[in-house]
Length: 129
Image (spheres, rainbow, N blue to C red):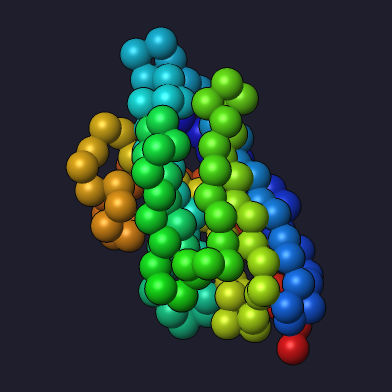
């Protein structure tokens, strides 16, 4: 499975930004709808942290306290695509944003990077003050 994230850029504090992640290399035994998906971010000198996750069918979501109410994760299984809508952005939201996929797992909503099997290359998000 390959993941390609896009949509990063430079935005001012309080602004909004949308990210997308397209999955490829899927098979009939492992379609997109079998993968839980998540967005993580990593700032320089900091550990990778989860910012949102979504279950296979999209019925369940996870947000840490830092992004809850500001970020919205969604997916379109027909388009093999994951989305992240970010609003009310702060400079602390800056970092490289990665999309990740987990095979059938009951740990998709733990925020633990180790629960995810596939990773995209990342897209830079910079929020200026």
